[in-house]
Length: 170
Image 1 (cartoon, rainbow, N blue to C red):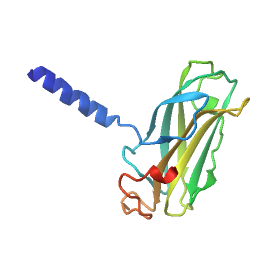
Image 2 (cartoon, one colour; image 1 turned 90 degrees about the horizontal axis):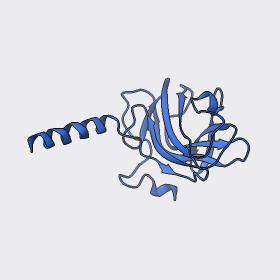
Image 3 (tube, one colour; image 1 turned 180 degrees about the horizontal axis):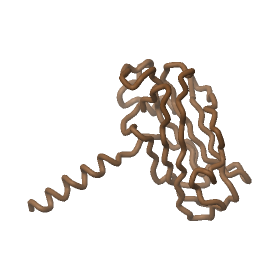
Image 4 (cartoon, rainbow, N blue to C red; image 1 turned 180 degrees about the vertical axis):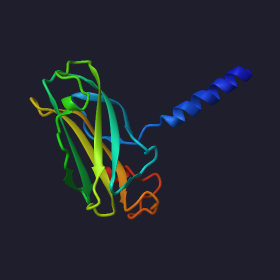
C-alpha cells in the first residue's frame, strides 16, 4: 500500500513538472492537437516579459496529407487579430517532418520573441498551423496571455476573471 502511495505521489510530481499550457482549440480541421506547452507557462494567463523569448511545443496528429505547413501567430486584442512577426513561418523548419502524411504525429517547436517595443497589455494569442496547399488548419489554438515589462511584474492589466478566461472567446 505504501509503495502504491509513493508511486502515485511521484507520478503526480512528474506530471506537475510537465504540465501543459491551458488553451482552447479554435478550429483544427485537418489535425488533432495532442498537447501544447509554452515554456514557463502552466497557468492562465501566460506572463510574457518584454525582451525575452518563449518556446512553444505543439504536438499534433494529421488527419490528411500536405506537402508543407506554415505557422502564423496573432495577438487578438479586442477581437482584432494583430500578427506577431515570425522570422520564417515554414513549419518544416520547426521540426515538423514534411511532407506530412495522414496519421503522422509531429511536433512543431517555435520561438516567440516578445519585443521591448510591445505594449504592456492582456490579450489572447492565436496560433495556427496551416497546410500551404489546401489552407486547412492542422492546429488552431488560443490561450490568454499578459505582456509585462519585466519578469518581476505580476499584476494583470485587464481584469481576467478566474474561471472566465476562455468564455470571453465564445
